[in-house]
Every structure is written in structure tokens, then in C-alpha cells.
Image (cartoon, rainbow, N blue to C red):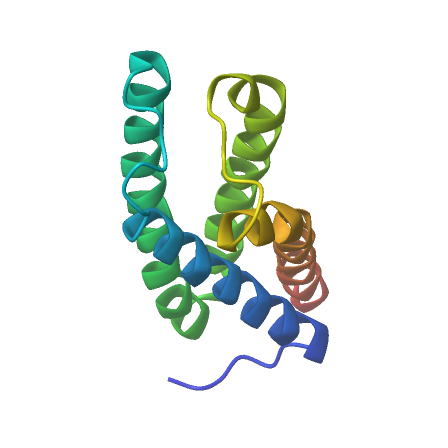
Length: 139
């Protein structure tokens, strides 16, 4: 496996996305007891379902992308574009719907993640753009 020849902004975006991903996994897996209102069944069930799905998707994506990146730029492009679309859709869905149902803590790690999430989305968009352009130049 050889290291793909990507630009410095790509690798900075890569590191930023992975840092945000690891922080998100940490905050989901090690959420303090009493973080969600267990008396409000809608909030609790929604948070449990979202946490399970997001943990799987984030873990799968973080495991699969480096393998694809070092083996096939074509498939890594398709993969990062699809993960970026999913991330953007969940970001929009969170702001339009979920922040009314689920109350997240206003400080600590979750507040940091909410603040840097747009940077992660922009970094993923940059990675998608660069992979698309790199393959277009080769063709």
C-alpha cells in the first residue's frame, strides 16, 4: 500500500474529521448517567435509536475509509461522498427536528461537538471535492 498523493488541506481535513469522529464516539459510548430524561419516553427512545445507529455508521466509516483510500481512490471517492451526504442530512435533521425533541447538555464535550460539527462537515466536503477533482484530472 502506498500513501495516496493528496494535498496538505486534504490531510488536515482527514485529521479533523477523525478527531471529531473519535470525540463523537466517546461522547456517545460514555454518556453520563442521567444525560437524557428517562421520564420522557419519546426523548429517551429517540436518543437510544440515534445513538445506536450513529455509533455503527461512524465506526464503520472510520474503519473503512482508510482502507479504501490506500487501495482505491475511485471507491474512496464514492464512499466519502456518501458518508458526507449522510453527515449533512443528519446535521440538517438535527437542527430542524431533533433539537426540539432531545435536549443536549449545553456545556462540556457535547457542546464542543455541536460547535465544531459544521467544521467537520466542511472538511468532509473538501475531502469529497479533492478526491473528485484528483480523479477528474487523471482521466
